[in-house]
Length: 387
Image (cartoon, rainbow, N blue to C red):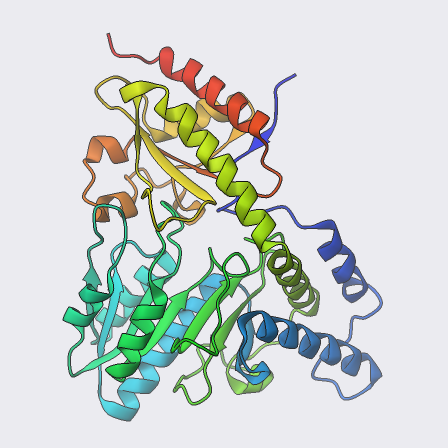
């Protein structure tokens, strides 16, 4: 029987049974609209505010600073469009700093703002995928309004020094937004001790439901809504709240945060074993993820283009036929026949980028799964060895 091995946890995760159990009442009997003043509405309003309290405790923020969205993409859009527009109106500042290795939720938003007259600086990463505080410092100008960077890169796992950058931004009186979609609940983030102004997060990366996310907006941060049509979320995000998904997000975050140390230790061992096996293949494999300041949840590597002819898409399809689910990068860009923009930002050769795979791990990943997946990958590669 063909094994079914899932190694794409950075794309999405299965919903936790405890999370599903927590959500079910709000999909059935507790169905009221949270804006209604009657009993049915107040039951769901209480659930939403309890969820808000849970998220605020995890992030060590004020409850009033947490806003629920439909996911990480909407949270990022609200942070970037909302803050940039508000600041330009208040101060005239119209310069944004981000990086070329961001998720497309950030890149596409910034490119759209360019069309609306904003100036955007796209920082280049170092060879290991990192953005260094000095790069941000050198790019800040008198008209800089916002810096937007991801905490953990979703394709290679590089970890940005958000603490240092947040202090720098505060000193320069520039807003700082962190895309924490790949780090929320996995890393300890204490917003009471950092100068981060905006932080976006998602549910389905931590065994919660799809269609749920949140944005931290520090009190006093200027921001305009991007969705109109209601006074929900204190007039910053119109639309009837998705109570089941919000409840699921909070439960998933609570569970993952409680287990984060055990999870971190487990995936670290899994990733190390994976690297150990890959390196035993001598020069056949090139590791793209940085060796330090890297998330243990993500490993990106390439096949040596001088030895193997198969590209990423062919490798993924061949692995899928054998029951192994992996990716070549962000699921949001699947089907796009171009090398990863992240690997391009790292200045890797096109041929190397075209042969990249991303393995991403979860708490359920086993040594046996890793060994089986790599055995199958090696068999596929041997059949594509250049003569």
